[in-house]
Image (cartoon, rainbow, N blue to C red; front, side):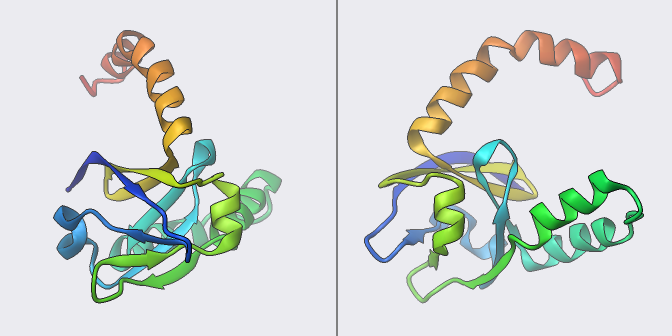
Length: 144
């Protein structure tokens, strides 16, 4: 399970060093794509296959489904982890997530999110203020 948060620097060549704790679980080939809330989603190959299969089965007759498929799938790239645990972030994804020199890796169960450090700090402050209300909603549907 991918959990926790780690702050790393992006180098001049747009490479990010993956947290060493996750490297074995993530594997050597990853999929990086546009995520929600202007972050990037990173999936191990096996998890990506599962999710993309589900998305591929959605009816394409609905405009919302087509739009999400285009957003999510066309923005995906396969990246290889190099010998020292780094991945290369393509320019279009770096720009989408407004990544600057410092980024945060957030482990979210079956995926990793990559955030610009300032955006992550702002988002985290906002969500922490809503934690009680979110827990209540999850309680209503039987999660908590």
